[in-house]
Image 1 (cartoon, rainbow, N blue to C red):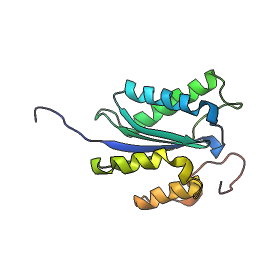
Image 2 (image 1 turned 180 degrees about the vertical axis):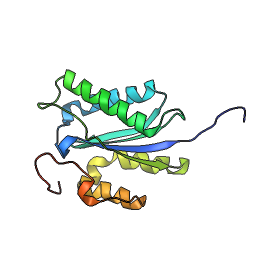
Image 3 (image 1 turned 90 degrees about the horizontal axis):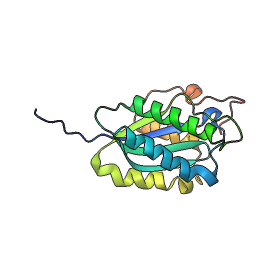
Image 4 (image 1 turned 135 degrees about the horizontal axis):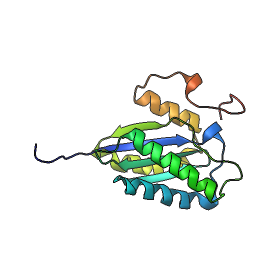
Length: 158
């Protein structure tokens, strides 16, 4: 073929290390803008982004040269460095090493964007653990519940 044409829509989910509630409301919009900028710099278009105090959801249209692992690594490394340099968190901030990446078709864009935008409403009913395990089951991903999250202080079902 003479040209490359793609539609690559990926929903990424990151948890704060130890599932701590370090992302504060007073700077989360600034964080979302910063992460959107990182995404754009590597030719990925942010379609939706939102976070809770202990995790972040983003939905991007990926450039075909950018793997999910590269996108996740760049966003997590740069955003945690930015948070720490700006001293936005009382504690040293970092993301857990893993992440979730789920792909969708063009016909699902509006539903996924609405889901991400409505995180605060959604989490009044379900915990992040329930939400994330629900994604793993929905996408038929084999997993061991004991190794879904890293906990620093305890093994509770936060």
